[in-house]
Image (cartoon, rainbow, N blue to C red; front, side):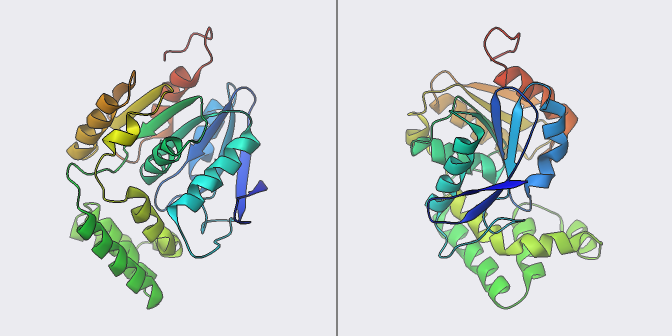
Length: 264
C-alpha cells in the first residue's frame, strides 16, 4: 500500500498490483480498496490495477468540509499515480463518481460503469431528506441506524435488514456509515445527467446485472443512449453485488489494448 496526495492535501491510500496498461477501480457504498482485491488479482496478468480507499474510508484521510469535487480530485491523483490516462471501472456510487469526474474533464482512456444508481426520475428533495436523516444518525452516535436507513432505501427487505443487524459483519457497515452522505452527494438529484454524458468522448461500457433491480437496466440504457458510441451489456446471473469471477472477463475484454484480442 502507498498513498497519493489529493489537491486539498488529503492522503489517499492506493494499492496496486499486476503488470500491463493501467486500470483503476472505484468502489461504491460500504466498500474499501480491499473489496476489489480478488478482482484485481484476476486481472493482474493483463493490467496494472490500482484500487484506493475513497476519502473517509480505510487508510485514507477525510479532510472536511466534504464536497463532491474533492472526490474528483482524489480520483485524478490516483489516475496520475497509475499513469497517463488509465482505464477506469466504477461500481455503484463509484460509477457515478467516475462518470461525473470525466464529465468535469478527468482524462481517461476507457470507462466501464456497473449499476450506476441513477434514478428513473429526479428526486432531489427525497435524496436531500435521506442524506439529512443519515447525517443526523451519524452525528447522534447511531451509525447502525444510518446504515439501516441507507440499506432500506436501497430496497433491502425489513426482515433481511433485521438479520444483518444481528450478524458479526454489521460492524463493517457501522464503521463506514459516516461516508454514506458522500455516496448520496455523488448521486446528486438522482436523475441520469444526459447532457453531461453526451460530452464524453472515450469508449464507455454500461453494465448491469440481470438480477439487479430493474431500474438499473433502465438508467444504464438511458445513459448508454446519451453517450456517443457507448455500449451496453447485461451480465447474466449477477445482481448488484457482482461476483468477481463474472465481471473479470468482461472487463478484460473491454479494457484490452487494441490488437490484444479484446472486445471493445
